[in-house]
Amino acid sequence: MDALDLARWQFGVTTVYHFLFVPLTIGLGVYVAGLQTAWHLTGKEHYLRLTKFFGKLFLINFAMGVVTGIVQEFQFGMNWSEYSTFVGDVFGAPLALEALLAFFLESTFLGLWIFGWDRLPRRIHLACLWAAVIGSNLSAYFILAANAWMKHPVGYEVVDGRARMTDLWAVLTNSTALAQVPHVVAASFVVAGGFVIAVAGYRILRERGLAVLPGRRNYPAAQDATVPMRRVPDMWRTSLRAALVMTAIAGAVVAGSGDLSGQLLREQQPMKLAAAEGLRHDTAGAPFSIAPGVEVPGLLSLLAAHDPGATVQGVDDIQARYEKAFGPADYIPNLPVVFWSFRVMIGFGMATVGLSVLGLWLTRRRRGGTAKPVPGWFARLCVLALPLPAVAIISGWLLSEIGRQPWTVQGELMTAASVSPGVSLGEVATTLAVFTVLYGVLAVAEGVLLVRHVKAGPELPPIESAPAGAAPARPDDARLTPTLMY
Image (cartoon, rainbow, N blue to C red; front, side, top):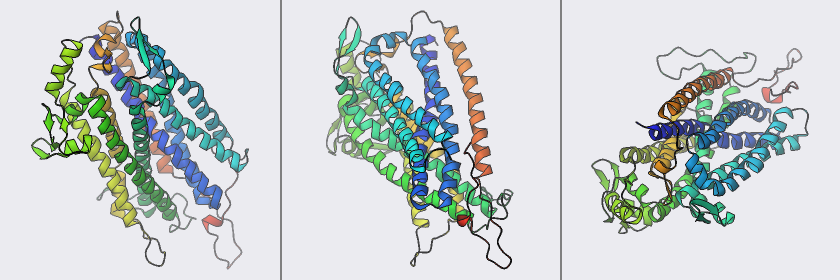
């Protein structure tokens, strides 16, 4: 093992860890903004309680994403200086737009939202959150546009061994970016939806005094015994239904944009497509392998070209062509990782979307408008399914990045030529160990914070005392005591 291998491991560890927080931030921000919008339009207090509850989870995750994202910036200068030298003139524009426009928009208005409770007018306060959400999605766009350029470089020329940008608009409207952005952003909504579904399922079980796993001890009753128990699950049913709808719609967008991405792979990155299928030779009517030995004839050609008889290039034949075009080298990525990442992404993603569709059916309203209660077994399934969307999106990212190897910039710069010269194996090993330990500590810290907040539940309103003989006030009729969110 040399410095290049460890540098790749270090970048992979830090990137995957950071990418755990980014999708949840993007999707959860939109979900919280939707809850606050519902409170603004309806005035129902349970929307406010849900906004504050999930808003705190959103902020915990946002803070961790910022911390881990800063480390990413150091990677380019520490271990990948040759890469930075080559792409710097192209990457500078989208990354500058991300930092100076998107991130400052996001962080500034998020700060106003955090400290604006009970200080700003409701409309202005709500607008601050939506501005922050727009900023986070713009940030994703600029970063994904830069990443897409590595897979399909456009709008540039090579001068003195460096890529010089000639057309910013071409970089930002790269066909790969236009397919990748909706795919990743929609997948982020699936991740956030799966997270909310799990939290709502846990809270429903907790308020009912049921255990997540049969045979375990039951949870204690609701934290505030003065609140009628029949009212609390209704709030969580509302949050669950909203997350189910978001996940189902986002899943459809993921499928559509994924179909477009598959067609672009056939044209722009045929090696990645061939590796994802394990296809060794050019094949007309190429089959799709659900698992080794289980194939669906013509399905890969149908997915890649919308033609079951189309020819899909194979790994070995592409290797021969690349050797003629670029010289002798190994142009084949890690086939087992790419093959199984593709299937885990599809399988776990479909399972998450299927769970959302099942939940919408189970919780639909009966004739007459009465709401069906959430079955206990389904609430348990929601909790147990928490890892599925996260594993799916990480697998998709591994497919995208490992499948591009051995290129950092497709057709222009190889990974072996991108690493910093003079960086020793010991130096990379030391920083890798430090980052791994640090990230492990941060992971434990965030996990503790998230679990503690989810177990504590939302802030419940005080019940106003009623005259003797009068019916007790409903929680939705009670006024929340004025308080800052944090």
